[in-house]
Structure formats: C-alpha cells, structure tokens
Image (tube, rainbow, N blue to C red; front, side, top):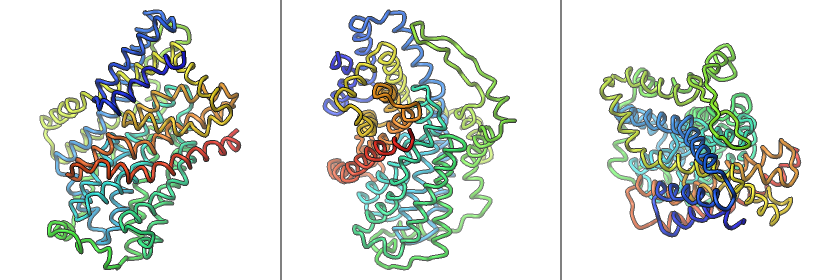
Length: 518
C-alpha cells in the first residue's frame, strides 16, 4: 500500500527529473493518478474525490494564485514604467567593490524580490543585474542561487508558509517563527559564502568582514522579529530592506578599496558606464519604489499589529463547506484583508503615480496572467492532488511508512523531504502542499507534542530553501538570466556543494531543536 500511495509522487519524480516533462503536464497527470489510486484502492467515494479536488482548486486560487499573480504583475508593471531601471541604478551606485555589490544585489535585493514576487524573479533579476555590470556569468548565477536559498520559505509575501499553515491546520505565525529559528545559522552563513564565491577563496572576506557580518545580522534579526510579531507575510521583505540599508550605510562608513575586487577591472565598458550614470534624485527614487513601499505599508497596517484596522477587514469573509467526506471543514475566503488584494491595489496606485495609463495597467495584468498560465495549471493541479492524497488516506500511509523506517529519528529527515519537494516542482509552495500533511502526520505518529508537530511542519519549508538551490527550474532560470547555454551541469555541481551541507545542517537543527521546542 505504501508504494501505491506514493505513486503520484513517484510519477512527479520520473516525469520531471527523468522524462523532463513540463511541470503543468506532470502535475496534471499526477492528479489523475491520485484519483485512480484514491477511489478504487483506498475506497474514496467519487463525490468525495470530486469535492476534494474542488477544495484544492479553491485553496490554489485564493489565496495562493492571487498572491502569485499580484506580485508578478507588480514587478512587470515596474519594468514597463522603467522603475526597475531606476532601482537598478540606485543599487549599483553604492560601491565599486564586487563583493559589496554581490551582497547588496544578490543577498539584499534578491531577498526583497523573493519576498515580494518569488517564482524565479529573485534569481533572474539579480543575476542579470550582476552580469550587466561586469560580473562573471557563472559566479553571478551561483551567488544568486546561494542567496535565494534562505528567503524561499517566505517568498511571494510568505505564501509557502501561509499555504503550509492552511494545509496542516497550524498557526502561520508560529510556523514563520520556527522557520526563522531553523534558518538562523544559514542566514549567518549565506553572506560569507556569497563573498567567497565572488572572490573564489576564503581570503575574499578580508576587508569586508564588517559588511558581511552586518548583512547576516541585518537579515536574521528582522526576520525573527517580524515572524514572531506579525507572521510570514513581511518577514523577508522587512529583512531585505533592513539588509540593503545596513549594507549601504556600512559601505559608506567602512569603504572598501581593494583593487583586486574593483568592478571594471575584469568587466566591460558597459559595466563602467552603468556605474557612472547620473545620480538618481530622491523624488525619482521614491516614485520608482512606490509600489513596493505601498505593499509594505498596506500589509503592515492591515496586520494583527493594528487590530482596529485588521479586525473589521478580516470580518469580510465567506465560509463554504466544499469537501463532502469525513473530516471536511468549511473553507474560508477572506475577501479584503488578504495579501493578494492589497498587492494589486498597491501596484495600481504605484503604476498610476508612475504615469502608466489605465490601458497599460490592464493589459500588463492580462499579459501577466497569460504568461503564468502554465504556472497556474501546475499550482491548481498539485494542490488538488495533495487534497485527494490527504483526504483519501494516502498521505497517512506514506507517513506511517516513513515513521516505521526512521522511528523517533524522523525529524532528522523532515527537511530533506521538504527539499525533495522543491527539487521536483521548483516551488516551495508546491513542496508545502505536497508534503505538509505528511510532516504533521509523521509527527503525530511519533507522539510529538503540538509544538513539535508545528516545528516539524516548519522543517518542510526550511528544507524547501535548500532544494531551491538545486532545482532544475532554478538552474534554468539562472542560465536564462546570464544568457549562457550548456553549463547546466557546472551550475548544478556548484549548487550541490552547498546543498548537501545545508540539508545535513537543517536535519541536525530540526532533530536536536525539537527538545527545546517540546
């Protein structure tokens, strides 16, 4: 029964890693396989199977896809109004040292893009920017793959963790806090690794030790604080903003003047020209950043920190019982106090201030949806698959087998399972959908307390961060950003060198950390 229950997951591994099938096709067939297994083998009533699919579609559309579409639309509109060019110029004017720029653009701005948009933008945009100002393409790509690992759990305004909370029935704020704690050592390690990647040696840290430490702590501490007090929505966004600010200030207070790492020494004429562009005025900078500023404040002031705003808006909701089988609970649609709606509002206001016409805003939104159509199909079908597997008992069967094989040592492999989900699908959100229930079911099977169950569920998101580095989708995005071909194996090999110690460290953190949580 274990192997039969595992068939949809085995199919995804085969289809995407061996057959190289596109995600939307593989996930669609995985849904078909899950239904074929659930109804005749696990005895699921056809009506229950159909309503499980409907509940999965509902969860995929609201809030997951709403956030995905809204965030990518915000970015696309910023590109269309050339606001992103202004932001790029602002970033590259801070320093001429490649190590500092890699931290600012790859770690800081990359984290910001992951928190705001996710879905590859945090790899493609920073890597493309680094190459355009004179970085070696492979080094730029590897640096951004490393930098993108830690923020992945909080991508697209925290949607992986919000989804994980919805799937597992756990508290999103507690999940976000536990994830931040589990990721803390990696938050500290990523900036030094980025610097060493750029400088090709440990000695590259010489002269930028203070800036590197500031970049690490500037990300870690805000992420912990925002996760604890507010939840996952703004944790990485706030951390990235703080990090960029700290890197800029530290670079000015402790200027780096090592000619060995000076931008332009091995760069291009174009790179030098980019660094010496005319200074951006404060007004132009604010206008360029306005959509992202508005997103930050909209989400902040509608959070639980401001109950007099949050509570009335959160009360505008509808609850509908979709799943007809045993264990079904009403699914709640929150219509206003949900990130997707607020992001769309911020994007439209920001676009209007940037002088985008109504016609342009409308067609930019249509273009965004059109370009995401295969992503939409993938997310809908994988979410529906997870619901069918969960309600039919397939997930419980897999969890029981995993616990039987590992016993009380299961927490040590929880992060590895999460990383496999992201490796297969390229998405932390999809990994949380696929394996969220598996994690909590396994935690219950070993007799874990409610807190430890949430701790183990958080490990799925933590592991997803490591898996993002070696995901074929991430590798493909990085290659597209740097305009390179035929070096997939080189990038994969470089990323695996970091993935293995990352996932081992995560396993140790989750396993030993449960003693403190419990």
